[in-house]
Image (cartoon, rainbow over all chains, first blue to last red; front, top):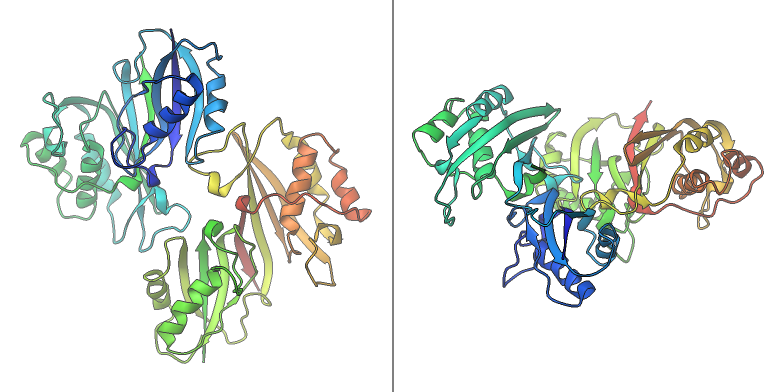
Length: 243
Length: 243
C-alpha cells in the first residue's frame, strides 16, 4: 500500500467546509468521489484539519492509501481534470507509510485578511472581511504579542467542540499592513474550533478602541470568553509544516 | 446641471460586458438602474470604454449629469449599498461640465494576467488565463518593444468594429514576471476592438516559440492579421489618465 499525499488549494465560498457531511457539498467529498472513481473502490481521504464553511485554503494536506500503480505525481492532473475550478490539487506525492496529515503536523499557519475600508472590493471580497471605520493596527500588533507562547486557549474555543485539552502553543502571531489591507498571520502547533476567527474578532474590537491591547491577555488569563468570531470568508489555511 | 464622475471596479465574470444591451446583464445597466431610482428620472451613464463580457475593471470611469442636490461623494455609498458585490463604486466626485470619460481621456492602461502553470489556481482563476508549457518571457519582453510608438494597429482589430482610423499610440508595453504569474501592462492613447487580447494572443505564440519576437513587427508592418485573442478573464481595465 502506498501513502499518497495531496496539497489542496480551494476557494471555500461555495462549500460546506472540508469535512464530508450528510447535507451539503464539501471539499473532501468532491475529491473523494473522483478518487473512488479512479481507484474503482472506496477511498478514505484524511485531511490535516477541518475548515469551516466558507474558509479557504492554500495548503490543506490530505492523504489516502492505494494499491494502484498510478505514479504519485499523476494524481494531481488526474484529479484536477475532474475537479471544479474552485478546488485544485497543487501537488501529489508519495510519503512514508506512517505519515498522517493531522498527527504528523508540527506547525500550522493561518492567515486572516481584513479590508479596512468603507466598501468591499469587487475583486477580492470573497477573500476578505471588510471593516469600516478607523482600525488602530498598532494596538492590534501589541495585542498579538500576548498570544505567543503556550497558553490555555479555552476562551477561544467555540461551543460545539468536544476537545478537552485546550492548551496550544503559538509560535508566531503578527499583523502586516499594506494600504487598506490588514493581514493577520498566526502559526501554532494546533488550533481549537473557531480559535483563529475568535482571535481576529477580539483583535478587531481592540483595533476599534473598544478594549485596550491587554484585553487579549485578559481573555487568555482570566478565561473570559471571546464571543465575536470574524466571518469565515477572510480566513485561509495557509500552510502546514511537518516533522 | 452637475457632472458626476464615478470610478468603477468590477469582476466581469458574470456580466455581458460594460455596455447596455438587449439580452444579458451588463455593468452599465446595473449602475444605471440604481441611478434612475435615486434620481427619479432617466439617467444617461457614459463609460470611458466598453469592456467585453468577462473583462474586469479596476478603473472604469463613468459620468452622468444631475440636477439633484445629493453631494457628489455620497453617490459612492448610495450606489454601493444597492449594487451587487461584484460591482463597486470606489470614488464619486464632481467634475467640470466639459469632462467626458471617453473624449477627455489621455491615456488608458490595461493589464493582462497569464498564469504559466499546468493547472489554474482555485483562488485566482477568475482573473488569469492559465497557459501550460514553457513560456519564454524574455521573448515576450522583446516583442513588446515593437508595440511602442504610433502605429497602424489594423491587424489587431477584431472584426465587428466600425472604426476607420486604426492608428494608435502605445506609450508603454511591458512584461513583469512574479513566479508563475506573467503580467502584461500596456498604456496607450486608445485601443481598438479586442486589441489587447489579440496582442496577448500573439505574445503567447511568441513565448511558446511558434514565432520569433519580430513576429510582432510583422503583424504591425505587414498587416498580417492577428487571429488568436487571449480569453477575456485575464484582462483588466486598469486605469485611465486625463488631461
